[in-house]
Figure 1: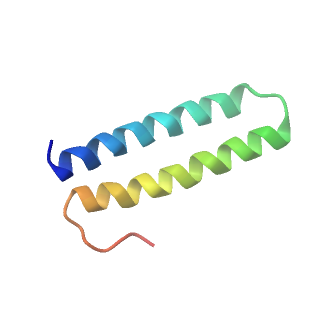
Figure 2 (figure 1 turned 30 degrees about the vertical axis):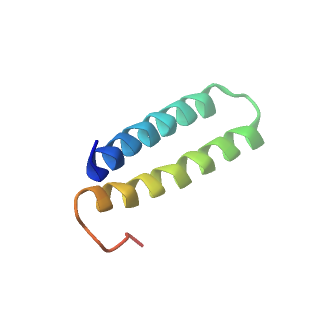
Length: 63
């Protein structure tokens, strides 16, 4: 598997995790837990965008 294939696979996994976290946040009744899950999803989503940029050959990380 090439480096770009590995990065694409990692991006897919990260996006799946974001989807799961957002769904879990919507199901929880605890406001603090909901906030924590949404923040974690936001961080992973941001990181996945950076990894996606690297996989597509964009050498400059998104800010």
